[in-house]
Structures are given as C-alpha cells and as structure tokens.
Image 1 (cartoon, one colour):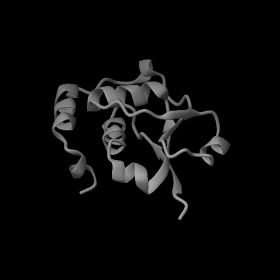
Image 2: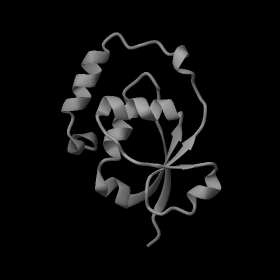
Image 3: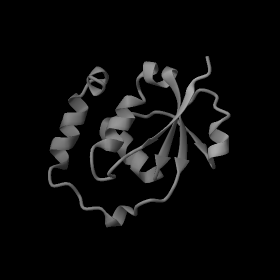
Length: 110
C-alpha cells in the first residue's frame, strides 16, 4: 500500500510546536506511517531540534512536486513565514526546554 503524503507545520514559532515536531520525527513508527513533509522556516526547524535535543535528517525539497517522489525520508519545504527578530522570547524558555527534555517519545501521542 502506498503511504500517505502528510504536510506538517510547526505552528507558532515561539511556542512548543517546533520541539514537538522534532520529538515526533524521532519515532520510527511515525516515519513509517506516512511520507512526511515539514513546511516552514529552516531556522524554526533548527531551533526546534536544538531545544528538543534531536538531530533528525530531512531532505530539503524545492516544491510540492518533489514531495511526490519520496525515498521514505522526512522532507522539508523551506518557506519564509516569520523573521526570528520579530518573535517575542517566551518568559519561561527554561521551563519549556525542561519539559521537552523530560518528555518521552511515547508521551507525545498519548
């Protein structure tokens, strides 16, 4: 059976969405279930991985047509949506980071 193609956005760049996406993509069952295309700013993805402590390799694609020819690896469509300088830094970034470090992959989808 052909895997579904699913686009995933990060949500609010200053929220926990980017970190949750990073934690989600370390799960083999998630990567096996669908061809995943991350859509958003490359700096948001990098920051989400940094805070989550992950280093998931993704294949950067230039357009949606390329997503139809997946090799099974997660893909990334870099679109400029928000400038880093326009974000308000969360007041409790340390607490947010601590929560994500302690979050196990199994808790994400529970």
